[in-house]
Every structure is written in structure tokens, then in C-alpha cells.
Image (tube, rainbow, N blue to C red; front, side):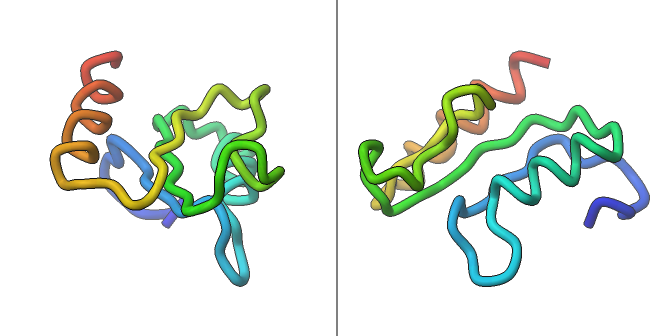
Length: 81
């Protein structure tokens, strides 16, 4: 995905995944110089320790979310650019 031709406007990633979690994906993208906004999704509670590390400043969409929740967050992030 990081070598995908064309423009990627937003990356939506689950925070905890089997091989490459959201944090590792974020770190890899930043190492390659990508500035694409991220939105993490997670079913874990914020106090669980698996929530977004605060130093990243990446928005977190808690599950279960509705299509309207997702649309609002995506719109907010895309409008920041």
C-alpha cells in the first residue's frame, strides 16, 4: 500500500491487527515520508493500553461506530488538508 501509485487521501486502519498493527503501519508510512492523515479504529477502551498513543495525535474511532460516525470523522480529516 505504501508503494501504491496515485494519491491516497486517508488511511483508515484498525489499531490492533495480527501482523501489522495500526501503529506499525503509521510508523512505516512516516518513515517513507508519507504525510497522509490516519484514522484508527479500535474495539478496545481508551484505558486499555492498546488505544492510540497520545503522542501520535491520530484520531481514534471507537467500535461499534455507525456509518454516520465514520463519515463525520473522514470528512473532518479530509477538510483539514
